[in-house]
Image (cartoon, rainbow, N blue to C red; front, side):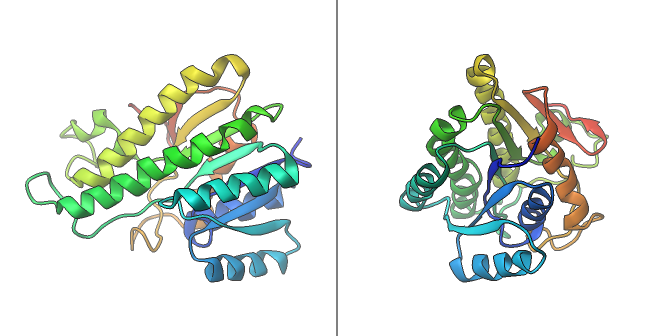
Amino acid sequence: MTANRIALVTGANKGIGLEIARQLAQAGVQVFLGARDTARGEAAVQGLHAQGLAVRTLALDIDNPETIAAAARIIEAEHGRLDILVNNAGIFESADGPPGMASLDAVRRVLNTNFIGTLGVTQAMLPLLRAAPSARIVNVSSSLGSLTLNGDPTSAYYSAQFIGYNASKAALNMLTVQLHEALKDIGIVVNSVSPGFVKTDLTGYGTMTPEEGARLPVQYALHAQESGRFVEPAGISPW
């Protein structure tokens, strides 16, 4: 049942995040659309309201602990729980690259947002997730975060050396593994989901639309029973 379930999707005013919010709302979930830019978040929500979907914007900059804490207070005051957390927000820096060439400032920004910021959101939302009867966490990862694929010369991802971005997604996968171990006894399902090679403002190119890329994260947000997995559209991904 998805009726009356409450979800938070971070970085959801555009791209995959917006499509995840749309598809969750289409399934009957009440969605908080997390957006760093409030105006863009409101514009996205208005578009979803025009489709009759139950979505509201929530000011949330995952690099700003004050906005994270405020978002948690709003969800607690209005609903007292959170059924679904989709950690989608993330950045890519053009100055990222191979270890010998990447800008340290760029790497630091990517890690702070993609991993530290996501960890901060997760910590703030855990009390609300624990209050839900059957909560799920989806960490939107990437095959670039697979240590196995990064080290396999036959992999399509082998030559994509972005030390900051790849390391941030590997760290996100570690968060999935450790959250799974910490939460499995209380029934909170946690998974890393790579949506596939999606064309967004982040990538600039790809083989999938945001609508297509949102399908697997939404599937795991709504229906996942197994926890502690790293998956992509083709199946299980190696850590």
